Length: 401
Image (cartoon, rainbow, N blue to C red; front, side, top):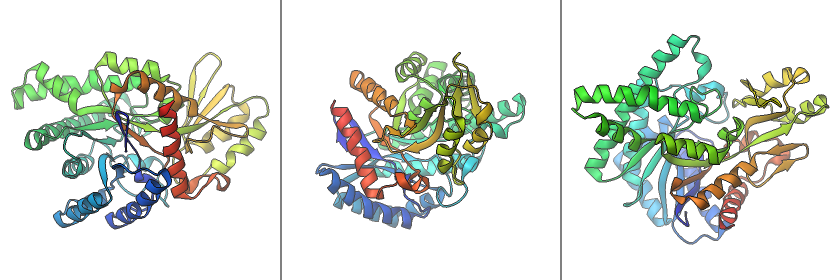
């Protein structure tokens, strides 16, 4: 949806199904319903989650032609893809496997390039297109600094090969595409400092050296290409969990010359621990589930942070915990600020929207991403179409403020 200077949608990763058939059926069912709920008459933007399996189907000329015909008939358009989850994302144990295959692999590179070729064929003329992706890998898979460095070098070469492909697509079609890396807790990249570290220690030096030999680019040309085609996906939930203030993070990225390709609008759980930790534990137990990782980051009164890899690990240590606050990687509906003693990081979304009002050039891609609908405690669930509609409406109304 075109709202002011922005393209706004929701991410279709909320819908179960890995095949293109299932993906398309969900779009056909929910897009007309959501449009009607919002009484939105103009062209409707779609944030498409495309699995590896679905991408193999959608790249076929007859299949993509059918999809494009449906988009035209529905007055809808695709402007962004979610390329973070490669495989199964619902009704199975995902946990750390959401990162697999990671950026050290050719599988991740090839899937991403294939998805970009599909996106280039879908986005309307005059729009840029982005794909959000894994923050390199899952950090706990690497046991030594040497292993981590090797992974970063290998991943950087694969990322740079994607940049070369995006530069080629732009020359061939005139369409500008960018890969939007999405930091998250316990990813190799989980905050703004680590995103900047990726550029300064790996992408820029490796790209400059490699392309000076293979493409005869000077350093300035190489840097321009990298910064143009690799950007950041700022997931509001993820940055709130690591206690980063939006205004400070945006300023850091601007100073480092890193562009924001997409902002994913999402809210996490947060709570003050207080003295009655048994009661807090009881209230959190309904959020323990077996599908996704729900990393917890605690903050001490001194400001020091401590991380737990999953909610059960945190709950096992809650009675001895000395932190004053916990923030939990569990996406909750945007339009609810509190759940009794449990709160959400909704205020971080408001801060981000305020920053966008002051500086609309930060990004033009906004995507609501609450993919946990099926694993929310039952009392928090609404009809899926109603929930998506209410989230989009909440964002639209807060943007108007």
